[in-house]
Image (cartoon, rainbow, N blue to C red; front, side, top):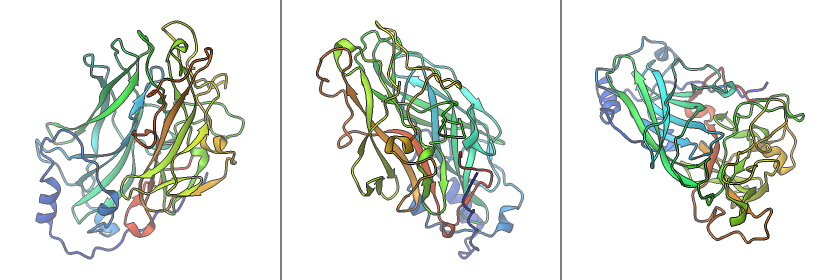
Length: 394
């Protein structure tokens, strides 16, 4: 397996004192609910990097009632039952060495009560290889002699209770528990989901986050969750890390009951830069993701094909396959920051000669994309240090 070298940490050059730095870091951290979407590259002016020696100093403590504020970077903003998967990338500013003791999440549909909460405790060293309920560090950025910014990824299952509509909206509820603190860091993230009971079957196709493993003769690895938390110091990333999938349970009698194509694009949330295989700044590109990624069965209860390690079912192709590239082919993102991998599923009619009604397919020019992957791009000069345990899924 290959990985790019981790950058070194730049020496301290600011002389910022501890009182001002810790006060600034804690000013907005007292019991805040909701989330902030941080500008990574403005943060990546990296105002006060410190030496490696400072990073090895004893961990500082949180005071009772103090909860660091979670800054959401990207998350699975669509989900389907079944599968029902949670993915999230975030950053949080903490005293050096402080980490969450427990990370938990659940999906809260707007139409029903509380759902099952999933959780993970200690960080997983190589989070990219994990297919269970887990969280792990992607990178750390020294802020001053007392605090650091930690970039993390969370993944796992999710259970959703449903109402009686084909498509509904809700929120992810994320909680981080901290040693020494009596409360939680909480954040709420919007998401759209499909109803498995299909009382009316009139929903739209949604992006699917591939889950668990799948045998594929073209790839040595069976891991299908490698689309999230990719990392690079040069901008170079493997196409084959990303599995592209969309699904729908829309009834054939209504038209638009399959989603064999999607538009895709990589987007930098800090700079606004975009990328596709056609180049920097190009519009979302249409690709085929057909291969059994649509609902099967009849009537009002149908199932998106179940993932299987035997290779008997599949969710969708890897991006390299969809574009006609090889497993080792790479692309290069143009600038640093946090990159979202977004798709806009398109609907077609199968089984009935019906036109797809307006508003069923997703419009990349007017609607938010469905996130099914991510890339952290920090150069060696940024001051950020990637977790040495991370690996590409080769």
